[in-house]
Every structure is written in structure tokens, then in C-alpha cells.
Image (cartoon, rainbow, N blue to C red):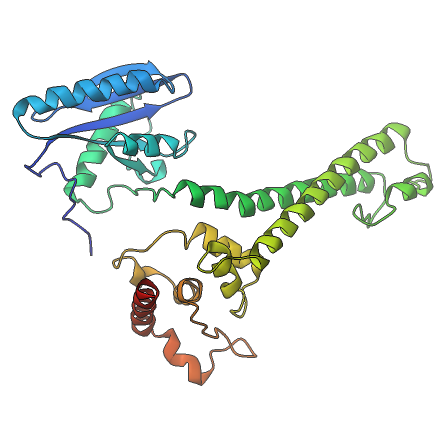
Length: 340
């Protein structure tokens, strides 16, 4: 069911609402401003990141909107992307109701050739914002902006993913260089790998070329560095989980690892990427059963076995996979945590 009664909808008569849209880039920010009662959008350009100029524009818009005798407010939006979430937090601190929109969710004209200018993009974004505030379904997807602490907590598992990809790239590069010389089954992470290079022979019986050996040594140094950093990163995560404070994110990770099939890495990903936010009642029925069970475990410590010994649902646990039962249990668990 779509939520139509938005408190920030433009139809609300209590406020004089200014609608503001941003087209962000590194060098310049384009602003589209629509004042109350106006059908025309004014466009302004400021230097990228110039908060003083933006503050002046916000103040001017509030002054013009307040002339009608009602409290003035500003509702804004911009496409989530390179600038991250800091601008959203700054706008919120300035009393602006801001929305970050997933750019991939905005509908566009599918004709092969279409005009594209900053003004056209601003007008399209303004129409999208007004339609969303009216409550029209499936107009766009609004990003759930995490708190600064939650966003920083994601660094740990995201950096680990990048390091794993980097380690795999260095390993495959070394294996590829050797395979091109007819040398198979190389193990770059095996202790003493560099010492074996001198004794290796190509497929036609020649020793490894000198420049090739030097390149492999440099590639191996980068591989060892990222492998060392990865080990330090994982050790820090384990130390944080061992010293987890009650009801902290690390405590949720520890509880999740008690579920069958979820380990420390998977639990860290669920807590940092999913369970940092609270789900609306409308969203709960659309969540998968496994996610709901994990949410119960993370937020309230309710442990529910997921699978039996052979990967099947035990008969005694079948009721736990009834979505209605899980939703009711989730609400009850959250109430218990709130009252504790």
C-alpha cells in the first residue's frame, strides 16, 4: 500500500513551501527554485561546494516565500552520487526537508534522440519531486540516508571487499604472467614463492627472462602488502566483536553468527548494510523470511534455527517460516527491546 499522506506534500496549506532541486557537479551546482504559487522555475548557478552562496540563496527563497504571511519551508532533492550524503546532512541542519533520489529510478523519455541541457534536467527533476510529494506511486526511489556513524561503520566491510578483489587481481596477474611462459599451477601466496623463481623454466626449457622476474617481484610485493592489510583489518573486526558493548552494532553481529549459515563476515554485512535502518510497516511484508529472522536475531537476540541437518526446514520449525508469524514476532521483539 502506498503512503499518500506525506507531511511534506505541496498540497499542505499550513506552509509557504519552496521547492528546490540541485544538479550537482564538481565545478558548478545548478539550482532550480520554484516559489509558492509560481508555475515558473528560476535557475541559478553557484560554484561547486560554495555553502556561503547556497546559504544566501536559501535565505532569499525563505524571505520571498514568507511574504504571503505563512511560515516558510524549503523542500529539496538531488540525485545521489559523487557528492555522497554530506550535503543532505548540511541541508537538514539548515532546516531544509531534503530527499536524495536514486538516479536510476527516475523515468526518462526512451526516444533515441532527446535534448539534454541543465535546465531540462532541472525541470525533469522538479517534476519528479512534485510527483513524489503528491504521493504518486513508483515515481522514484528515495535513498535512506544513514547516520554519520552508520556510514562510517560500513567502511570496514566495504574496504574488505575491495581488498579481496585487489588480492585476487594481483594473484591472477602473477599466474597469468607465468602461464604465458608455460608455467602452470603457480601459488603466489605460498611461503618462499620468490625463491622458486630462479629455478623455474619456461615451457621450452629456458630460464625466466630477467625483466619478467623483476615485474613478478614487484607484483608480489603489492600482493603481500594487500594481504597484510587484509589480515590487520580482519583482526580489528574480530577484536571489536570480542569487546562488543551491549546493544551495539558489534553485539548484533555476534548474535547473528549464532544463526546457522551466517558467519562473522556475513553478519557484519547484514548489520552494516541492512539493519542500520528501521523498516516501515509497509516494507516488512516484502522482506524475505531469512532477512526477517536475521533482523529478529540482531535486534532482540531471538535465535531461530534456519535449516536442518540436510538443508531442509525441520517440521518443528515450520511455523517460523510463516510470514505473518515472523512479522508479529518482529514487532513483539522490538517492543520488548524498547521497554527494556
